[in-house]
Length: 479
Image (cartoon, rainbow, N blue to C red; front, side, top):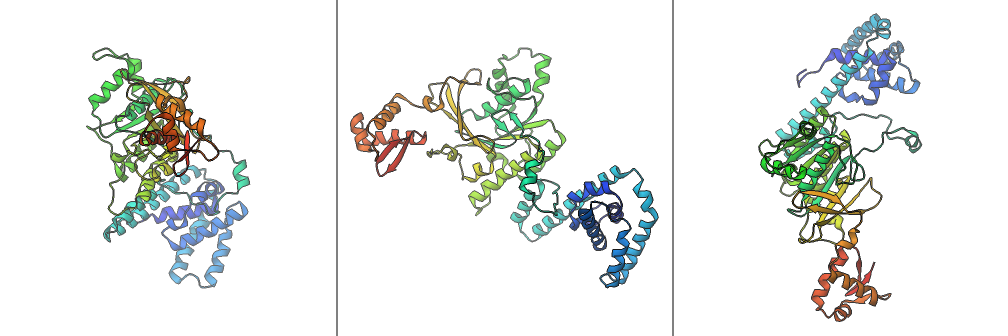
């Protein structure tokens, strides 16, 4: 079928099946958008057949002839249309009984679904071309984003679902790709440059492939992984994999390990994966063709998202870009980990550390934030929040800089390891001196024998970590 025509015979078959087959009606009506039918006449008959089935739960059968007679008597259809329908109804009479018992319904359903998909895509292709021809490039780009995910939109003529019906509907459980860490949908992993985001993501992919606990703590299944990196050469990735596995250069790797690691497919600088809206479409196709792939790493967001448009609203752009990835992840029930840089200024709310607007974390299903304690220690804090988590959480990770591995330290509290002796001393003074109205900056500074500027610097860090709050001009109180 070309982009400029349609299959009239397939549309006739669709209508005949709607009139005659209960099984066909049950499968096709929930996804049938009548606007996809090119023929107005067939569209009207299909509409009547759908209404009858939805009301009575059975095909309309030869009852369609009575309806047609009434319609023609009212003059609703012209002469040419009446002739068209006379031929169609005669065809229906000839094959109605045979169609009921043909036993070929499955084939008819499959062919109809394919046809409707083609019509759906054709209509939106034509609209995109129309927008491009009138120089409405941004509108065309947004239309592609809206209709790529999902490729085929279901049409529910009944509207929403009742809450009681939803309560009693059996739904598939939420898929945790890594139990307690990575869930279906898009997860934003935020961290500073060279903070170990890429190494952390690679660790997760490798441990999943090998069937081992992720970070020595979280259980997972050996799903396939698609690892997209736009900045790192293959020799660097190879070196990291060797160090993570503890394999020296030139050492032999056993076949079992090689087979397991082949569950991870890498696209690097030499063979980059498409980006922008083309990347969304390519990723959709890849996950469709590789249903066992349930973990995707995008390193980094800035290299994958569409190019920034001048004058585009930042919040809207951030939300739309991440939302497109999240919809794709939810469509395929996969976890997509999006690596992203943090902002230089660290607000008190760590969920606002992502560089850009709140639209990024608003569109993602989950957010993870990685922060090293300091340069001297191997400890870092990984904090998380999301729609499938019960509140915010945090864990301490210990990194082996030689092996490039991460391990959860269950014996350490993430709120405590960030505290240097100086900050602990400031916190103790605030707790000691604070009354109902808090304590002033100058009082804390005098008690510590520090300058107000140095004291304020330490208090600001405690505020960001959620241990102290500012309650007024120059007044502080412990949380």
